[in-house]
Image (cartoon, rainbow, N blue to C red; front, side, top):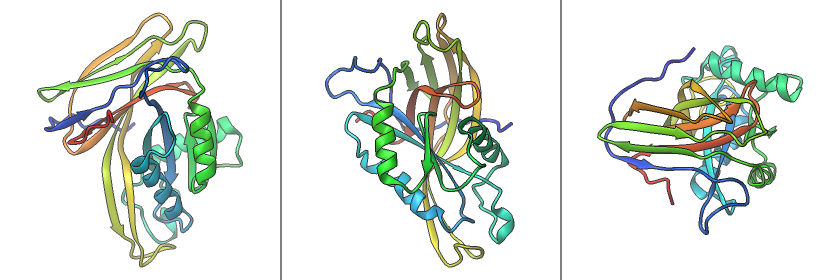
Length: 250
């Protein structure tokens, strides 16, 4: 299991999510989690990486705060280039999605929106359609606040009569990363990534009766993403983002 690095950080920006679908304040954007499974050893992946960056930077879907995760798998490392961002833990997470969605197996690039929709990760129309679909789903509020080098996380209970229990996950992600690929299918290319997941861990659970609370130190220079997901990589019920030095509440 990957461990979270607990380091004290400096300047922070805070994002807080929260409300049920259809019960939003004017100007409120509902957080939508978008995961990309990718690899620098895969020649089909750079368009997926570029799409993830566009979703992250441009935020093109009205009403959505798109929170992205770039999860680099390791199963292409044997064909000429070992992706320095890759981890077997992300390959295992994607394999769990493959079982849930009953695909023929893991592939790259693969994009998953809200734990509910999967498709080829370079498909912009599919991505925006899935994000709009996610806006119609009920959510739980996830709050992140920070002061004096600490983060307070609070997750509201699940809606009554829905899932019995869901996991609360914490992910630390590097804001950006660039690599000159020297071998393999992308030899000679300079690849750029955003929200590169370094650490991912389940911190606890939440149900329809009790909320989740935790306080952890910050890690400097990273994004902290908190999301709530049913067991077996099921639907995502809520998410929030805190990014060092950047205000994500826009």
